[in-house]
Image (cartoon, rainbow, N blue to C red; front, side):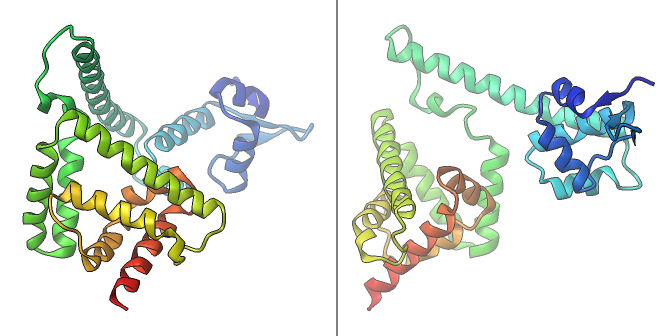
Length: 257
């Protein structure tokens, strides 16, 4: 049986030795055996398990859940790989569609070809993910949310490409400004954040196609507790998800005082 040391396996898999040590410590990937020289050695079973760990990580599954999946009595390697292949194939097709959209947009901007405005967003947000968001909102906030979603969808569709680009640029500026407040240690309840929060509320109203009163803005903070929103804001700055929602609610409370 061919075996690999920690260093050899790390190089083979393109990960760090530290990661392998961590997987060993938490019981996720144990070596096949430890030699008299106290080196860890990994065989074929461990290589296949590591492959599964890395695939699941790429699919954004937490390490704790990966261990439970791989250690389940009914875990089937071949079936799991087939399911993963199908999922990745779907993603590959979506990414291919996004590449085509980008290529068409580049050609449009260069004046090489015409392109419908609606095609600017083709393939970027999957119908499945959009449907998931909308169902989550309706389940949590009731039937009135369906009308709000439709109004927001209409408002966004009516924006020209330049208006959409300006809107996204404004959103980025506001979010980066608030993230800087977090980095500087400004409390999220501080009134000094009000100018940025008010710009953010104005942006929300623009995307909704209607006014965003303080109570609705505070309610939006609840929506931002969706895991996907949380992940997006944490990518901007660790701790930013909670910082933003706290600032939003604090601003809304001040308007009611």
